Image (cartoon, rainbow, N blue to C red; front, side, top):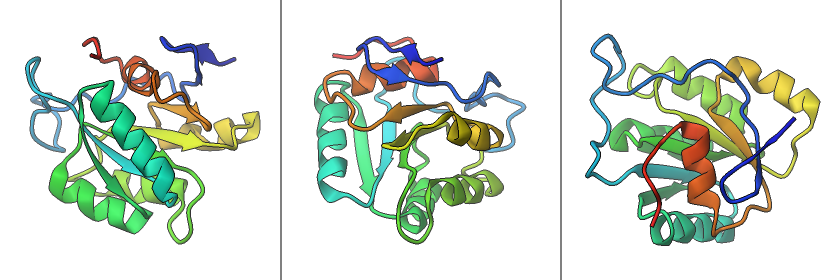
Length: 165
């Protein structure tokens, strides 16, 4: 029951619940995200350095987005608080804080509770999808991903209408 994203990669929405819209006047979680002429800010979190570099390059060069990276869930929490990214691309299996633990910590923090999160994982079974539903993810992108379509796949899952470069 996956969806084929704009780039053809299998992407999956985990929850039909609408993601919080940053900048909503009723949103207690923070400031307005980028306007139509501003660049999106993405935080890529993975313990694999090569994967972080590939994802960062793909999102910057193909998507035209500003990308920062973190190598752990704990580092991601700190960066999310200070950088306030527009979305987080988060590996599921990492040492220490894994993806679900990191999501729960981000959701519990008023400064990061509204940031849309997409899981990036090599492991995607229907059992996992059921377990992840309460996390209110924007979606899941499987590894290996296509660097040429990563930005379009993320934009589709996040409901972002702007075209990538």
